[in-house]
Amino acid sequence: MTILRDGIHATAGRLAHTVAGAWRRHRQHRAWLDLDEARRESRLNDLGLARIDSPLFWSDGGSVYDLLPRMMVVHGVDPMTPLTVGNGVKRDLERVCSLCPHKSLCARVLASGPEPEACDFCPNAGTLEALGSH
Image (cartoon, rainbow, N blue to C red; front, side):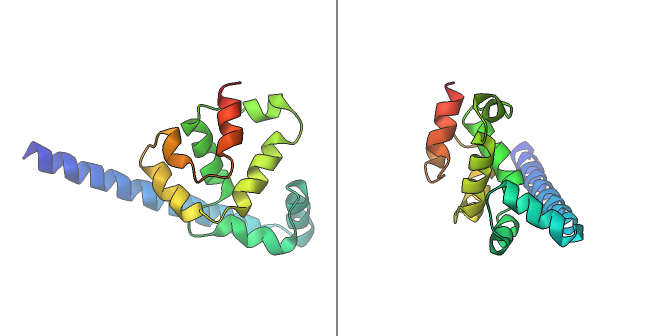
């Protein structure tokens, strides 16, 4: 009976996490859409992206602001490290993440609490490994 109850609790926890993530992405997307065109353009320019690239942030797999911090944790990277290493490192990480075609896979793998080796598909993996050992 205990095993069944633990399984139900684990499933409920994963479901709650999935719903919370979907709700957070929806709020982020609404906030993006509520920005005027000039502010959206400015934010895209900060990342070195064009207007046509903005849908990359809102794929079904989540946004760069959701996935990248979680991937950094997997590689043992403090969120402040890219900012202290040098100008543009965080921006480059965000840009590479936003253009990555593996967002759905990334979200699934990150949900399982992976080891860094399980994230070899990540185009930022090499940089994050280097930052983690920094």
